[in-house]
Amino acid sequence: MNAGELLLGLVIFLPLLGALVTAVAPTTPIRTPARIADSEHGAYAGSAGGSRGTVAGVRRTDWRGLSGALIALATAAASIALAAHVGAAGESAELAPGGWGAPLGVRWIADGLGVMFVALTGLVGLAASVVAVMLPGATGAGGRPAPAFWPLWLGCWTGLNTVHVSGDFFNIYVGLELAGLTAVGLVALGGRAAWAAAFRYLIVTVVGSMLFLLAVGLIASDTGTLDFRMAADIIGSHETMPPAITIAVLLGTAGMALKFALAPLHGWLIPAHSSAPSVVSPLLSALVIKAPVVVLLRLWTGIADESAAHAAASWILGAMGVTALLWGSIMAIRQTSLKKLIAYSTVAQAGYWVVAMPIIGDPDVVGQGLTGPDSDHTVLFWVLTGTVALIVAHGLAKAALFLVAGLLKEHYGTDDMDELSGAGREHPMLAMTAGLSAIALAGMPPSLAFGGKWQVATGAVMERQWWILAVVVVSTLLSVAYLLRILAPMLRDTGESRRAAIRPTGPAIPPVVAGAALALAVAAVASGFIVVHFDALLQIGGPA
Image 1: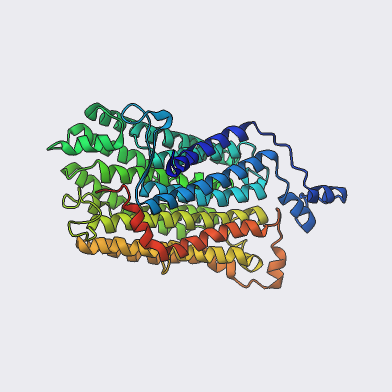
Image 2: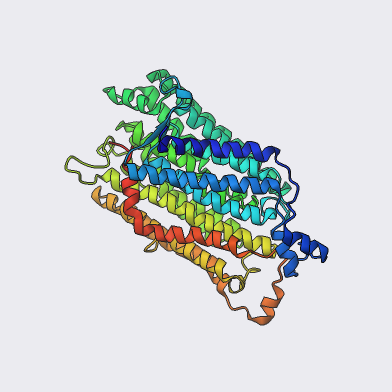
């Protein structure tokens, strides 16, 4: 077993092992020296005003949380190492668990697209795990730790990585189900106020998965295999696309659009993301809804053809993307709740992920590789790499912004933006995180999102799809408007009397926790300098 195979196995089995370990690990608090000393002096976390009490509360983790955090650290390290290995080797890493490869067994393939999202999951997952272990109350409702958080989160991590590296359709379905059902459980940890949202999310994730399963059945019945690459080769050998495959692509597209809340299918997302516990919201927005987007991209670059049905569907997706960008942005501007504003911005940003689908589904573009006969970049290269860059940038920046919102809510007991006026002056590190996240989400240079928009715009110009340029410009201006709605109150000078009225009701925010959020925001901006490496990575195992 070489290094690539080892790392590929670790990114699946480590979080799975962690889910099992944390499910049975004791929730007995760890008696650290700091906590013992504080308890002897009567200091405890229940007092929001006492610094010694709040620090003791921050350190009041348990064996389950510690074991979960250690496994999260190991999984994140393996995820980043896998991406680095694939990038350095210039070829995909493959593993057939148990020695049974395709078509009878399971095949995991860590190609460029897959390892990008495995690494994204590792970075965001590590940051969220740091918050969860340092502020256990952020995992549940009312500041109370949720013992089920760690097995649910690590199980979700397993499902996400399974989706990103699976080489066959059925295991993609299994990963989607595992990630979706555990995500529903994570939302339900928000208490009674979140149960209705969790139930709606459950219906959505099951319906979306069933649509995809129908698509898998149609593909298997026509090609005789569940292996993605084998099925793509068989389908590509047909002179005309079989009707069953056309229907399968449309069903799979509908299921994935429902799962990542593409407007107008977004009604479930706002209550789910805004009512989830503080540490769960960034996981949902940055990671969970990305898995169906990856599946959608694989369907359209590997299975879809130049048929009229697929071309029409691509224009429907483009129209839904425009709707998402405009409607989501307008609704975000109207919000007074910080978490709801960020949730609506997710609806808006999802529009970027499909607004260029009319180009990907164009009969003249379908079947293109990422490079032409003279090694020139094709239209598909610019559009696909730009779209992926926008998705990754959103994951980093949105996780950071949701962490800021969650930390402020845990500390002050509210996410009402008027009530949080001046909070940025009290917490400059969080204010800096929010500012950098805003730069990344708006797509300002030098952020990764700016590079993504530039690439999508380049592809649009090559295809003379000028309307895409107009949509990108208008949506960028709208995003600046709703992001200023976040920053302006936080940085407002409210005066001494107003600042005195803003009293913390929860634990203090440890610097390491604020630093974890800041690191994600910095990555969202700084990764714009290495966007060329994203391009090179995407060509590994991508459309030839």
